[in-house]
Length: 289
Image 1 (cartoon, rainbow, N blue to C red):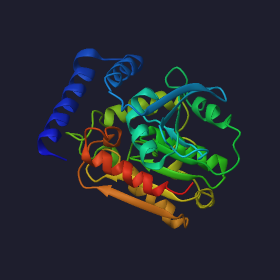
Image 2 (cartoon, helix red, strand yellow; image 1 turned 30 degrees about the vertical axis):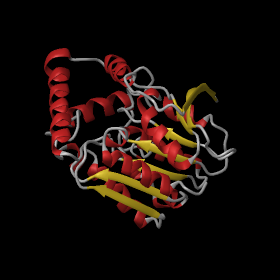
Image 3 (cartoon, rainbow, N blue to C red; image 1 turned 180 degrees about the vertical axis):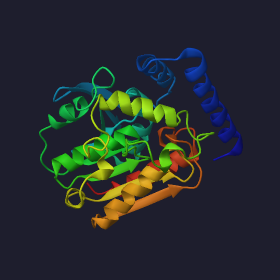
C-alpha cells in the first residue's frame, strides 16, 4: 500500500475509534446508518447493473456487469460488518469488481442484523435457501463466519472464499490483541462488544457461532476453500487457525497473506491496488463454475 494512503487510512481509524469510544458512544444502528451513507458516495461504473428482489425471505441485491456470461450460476457474497452493520450497498464496489472479472452475477443477501436479531436469526434466514447443489460463497470478516457456518450446515461441497474471516468469537486469542494501532477501525473491546451483541447469550464455544471449532468431519465435507488475510490485521490469527484446522481435515485449501493491509481492504477495488489484486485472485479461484 502507498505510504501516504496508509497514513490517511490509519488516521481515519484512530479518529473513528476516538469518536466511537470517547465522544459519540454510538449504537450499532447509528454506525449502520453512517456506513450506509458513506457507501452512497460510491460512483459506479457505467456498465454496473444492480437489481433487488426477495430471495427466499431475504432482501437481496444482485450485482452484475453488462456483457456477463449468460446463464452462469451466481456467486453469493455474505457481507461483513460485525454482525451488526453494513449491507449490500457497502459491498457493491467489491461485488462489481468480482462480477467484471468472472462475468457472473454476485448476490448480496441482506440477512438479519444484531442486536435486534441476534444468533441464530441470520442462520435461519440463510437456511431458508433451498438450493441443494454446491454454491460458490464469499464471506468477509463476520460474513466469513456466516458463510462458513452456512456451508458447514449445508454439507453440499460448497466452494468458499473467506476474506479476513472472524470465525472465533471467544475473543481470547491472538486476533484480539494483534496490532490494534492502525490496521482497523475496531479493537479488542469492539470484538467483545459485537460478539456479545451477536451471540445474545449463546456460548461463544458453540461451533455454530465459532465455526473454527467445528469437527474434522464437517470440514472434510466442504469443497475448495480460499482464505485471504493480511499479516498485520486484527483477524490474522483467526485465519491462520482456520487454515490449520482445514489442513488437518484434508480440505483443498488455497491461502494468501497480504504483507500489509487494513482490515476490509478488499472492499475498495477502485481505490487500493491490493484490493484490485484481491478481486483478481478471487476471480481466478472462482473462474470455473
